Amino acid sequence: MEVSSTKDYELIATLNKTVHELHVQLYPEYFKEYHFENVKSFFEGLIQKDNQLFLIIKREDEALGYAWIELKDYPENVFKKGYKSVYVHQLNVLRPNQGLGSLLMDKIYEIAKEQKIKLVELDYWADNHAAERFYHKQGFTKYREFLYRDL
Image 1 (spheres, rainbow, N blue to C red):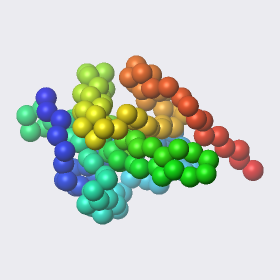
Image 2 (cartoon, one colour; image 1 turned 135 degrees about the vertical axis):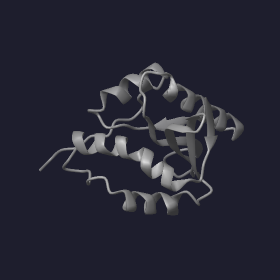
Image 3 (tube, rainbow, N blue to C red; image 1 turned 180 degrees about the horizontal axis):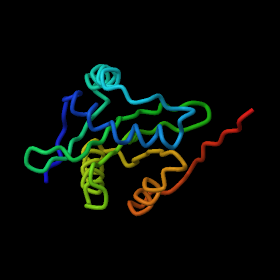
Image 4 (cartoon, one colour; image 1 turned 90 degrees about the horizontal axis):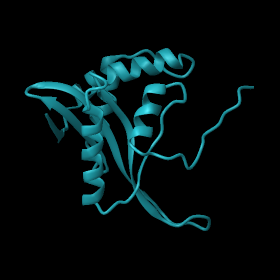
């Protein structure tokens, strides 16, 4: 099993399909249907930025999942101190409950340490209970909640 960085936006777009379809299923009022060409174009532009990193987990030549992370730099302002974080935008594995997500997270923690960043942040949709359980096992703690009200 190998976790490495990638610039293969077509592969990321392909691997994105299952997580995107989960979001469509859970929140059809917010998410568009998956369209490979659109997703591929989105990742093609994003993958060139220095602060956006994409990790791929493979067994031999088979891609089993990916993570999209961002190195964020929050500047100080009148209300808050400045800080840096590694922000996990997406993490998806094709075979759950086999330790693949944990291997991706271990690589994310390693990248954070290499960058001298002490904070890994992420969010997930409230009805994604698999994500909730996974991140709880990883030791993540809530420090802010995002609420909404339909009108």
